[in-house]
Length: 333
Image (cartoon, rainbow, N blue to C red; front, side):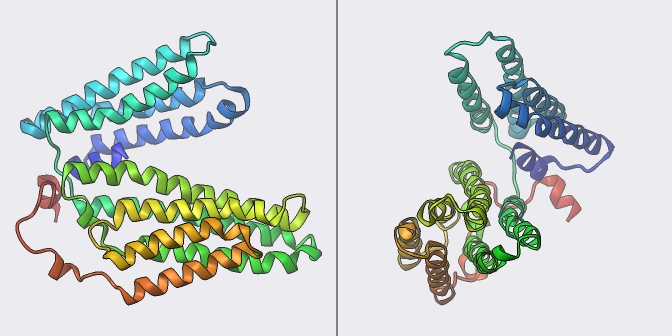
């Protein structure tokens, strides 16, 4: 998230910017390699080491941006100092012996990381391009949603070796496609960039999308659970249904909270919340996955009927804070 917001303000696309970006990629690779040891062996050295590498390269970019001066320069300097100080705290956390305080401190450092942008934007102000920001968040949402399609596709491939499972998996794969398509349709119904026209709204949009991403990621896990239930049994239909219903319901609620505020009328908002509630209850009836598909289809029908106001009519008047590209982006455009 921090890189996305930095890039929309200070993406000069020169050799230094690209090298720093490659450096961050290397940190992400190390971080990814550290996920399994963290969960399986409670060893966070590799994970945090990769994260610190990634963030130190980000510090270098913020320090460079601070040379622009003005409100943006002040904010960039706070970003750099705040991120660097937090990385020092992460390294110190690694050195702590095992104790009951280690987990609360871990969670506290996450909160500190999240507070750095809030503090920086209060001290200064960085420009952002609403269209670019929302496009990048939207693309990442699509990537995570695609994991559920990947899960069902892999299951069908594996089912070639278990002929008796094909009859159960083909309908499940079809419904997975429909659920994912329904969530895609809902997520991209409103015009997202109209929801980040102030510091408060952009903060809610940025941080609120963590829960959108988390719900989309959990959906792929839920699909895997349903596939295992169809192939091996041992998990009741209702339990497997909740593994899909909870992420879908959460996805709808958080998309509504983060993206629908500027576009949805009372009918659409009511339909979104009602659909989320009904989907959460779907596992209590028979065929919960099919019921979820039907509810999502009904919600999409409401959205088609209540299409959003065209942007040309809705966006009148003077631009609000953050509306429009940064000087660097404007120059390239």
